[in-house]
Length: 347
Image (tube, rainbow, N blue to C red; front, side, top):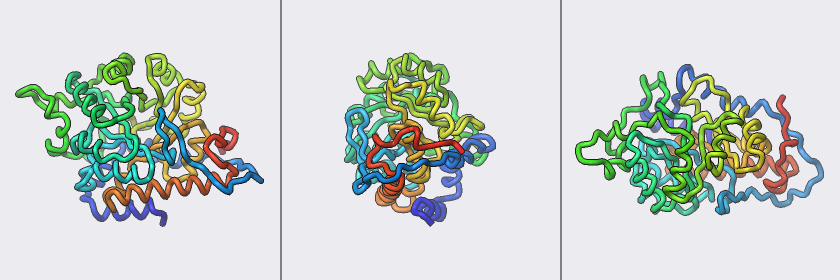
């Protein structure tokens, strides 16, 4: 049993059944969720023989930040459900692994405290809420706390229905759900109504966020090449290929099968990143060969957090990076620049 499986098994015995279901759930019949990893397995590798791989370098640069690994932590909500230290432990573990962390708008600790616990670059994921002023204030909190980029989620006009939790999400106490929103609410406002996603946002939101903060804005939730081009034309600094872990539109195409089309459409104008079903260094290597600059993992981080806190997060990221390094060596690839499209074929 590998470390991801060990951490997941431990988390399933540590957490309540309700929390396990909340983190595990996919939308609808969970078709998209269940196909995520298998889609990466459709690709086969064409290794280079007789290459010097005495040393293998997995470092990558993203928007000026030097990271030790292209395997990063995807934004996910309410880490405090998994561990009492929540995002404080997650961001600490990511930093110890020299990995990028993306903090969710739905964080369960104050953003300023999370930023203070960071030891490596981190980004902030943005849900544009019904109350646009509250959205702006929360984003500004993230900038003050040290976020280096914004990740605008574009596939969630409404939260997808999940049968496992008989609705859209696990019942959340207000001190978790509204911890970063309440300070910005006008007197007497309904916090949950103000925090609901705004289904009316469009491409202009990209430029609004950039003007507000001066930070690069990446768009997450892109599965089409033409959509990626629209986002770039509207000012996006990067694209994240994602189907939200299968938690939004069920039967959406797996990220693994959408990635190449998006990379080709972007044509080098901006970094393309990807999440969804990455469970090994080999999966990450396939994604990098298809053109991703970096990959994100989501649920494995939550299971690791529940199992062993910050140390668990570090262990999982280190294990995935070590597996990537080993796979690169066997494929004759001394660094990420050597990972090119001709490494993979679809079987």
